[in-house]
Image (cartoon, rainbow, N blue to C red):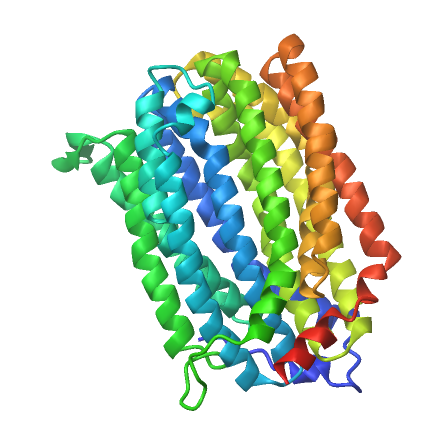
Length: 478
């Protein structure tokens, strides 16, 4: 068991941690999250390779509804943030009982929101592929995939909420391990559900591996079953094993207006940004879909392959949310700024490196994802376009995490939606008819660079520290 982080050593008023102590703390929180995110993309890569072996139409079926699944997943993440940021700030202020009360209210809200989103997803599943302009042979598989995804949303919401709360308490290790297990289970379940019974050759032995042969439907069921198992485990760890947040007697299970209002204030801007940004992804899918099955499949696989670059940024962004949130709760604005700057610089450096590696390895990556030469060539080309945006993409990811920890959610949300709709979709609609899928990715690359610059300006100006967001959270908890 990893030694617990003693936050008081860093957050007490007289503490002045050195640069190397700060860097060590950032890395200690970031590395487990980065490993979990990298593992998730590795498993998605393997998952995509499994489906890709079934042909372009199977890959296109999942790719067609992928932007809509991102939209629903983003709403889940934004709702979780409304409670987890409160927890980080309350722990930083030394108010553990108030943080435990937020845990209970967050779990109740997660179940309610998950059921609502699942019902909406199930209701639109039959007509969604047609509205997205999917080709006729792709629509039935895409519809079934999204229906199963929607049914698993309550469990996905519960997993994200519990994991986010554990992370903001300083426990990156448990959610990271469980998220890695989630990916491993997904691959195991998929191997049995996607393919029919088959013979597998190992050195000196021939094994008969049972399978259901469900194809795209099997991929959806594998993911759903994984979500069910891990959401239960994640919630149990939160409620019974967390040193800081586990359930104790005397803390009531009741909804409090002040907590819900604060959660709404924190999460609503993120949710609106995710809805509008998710809508932009859906609009992007409508732009790509008329380009044909090969373009849709290449676009979907390129997004999966790109994840190897930006997942380190999301891991560091999670650490930044925790560090800035707890520093804000302790009233240490100086540490808020130092942790935000250090985390952002680290994210930019790492994603610049992974971007360079992605540029070099793009053809090989696609050779592992699909046997179709046309998809391989097109996908590698667009992936190399995106490599140039990775450093500034990192700036937007990590800076957003830092700002979120301080409770600054409105301005980052506005920056995201203006950038997505004002630049990406506008440019993509103009460039796609002329350049095809590369035009769409040129628009994406340009938009990510602009977004990164906007977030750096917001971070460096320091106005995000003037809003007294943490004080408002703690005052309402009292």
